[in-house]
Image 1 (cartoon, rainbow, N blue to C red):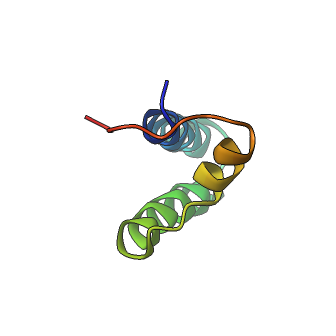
Image 2 (cartoon, one colour):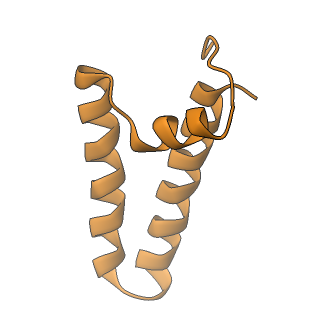
Length: 66
């Protein structure tokens, strides 16, 4: 998997997990959902994604997302 696809999979998983936790545990988990969305939005404009940087250091290769 390329870096872009891993980032999309992790972000989507985090959103789904936090929504489930908000429904079952506490509505405060929606703050985590908002954080993930905000991070995706800022990375679209700045090109900086912390997870992509970490994956690059581990040797993952970038590639086309779609």
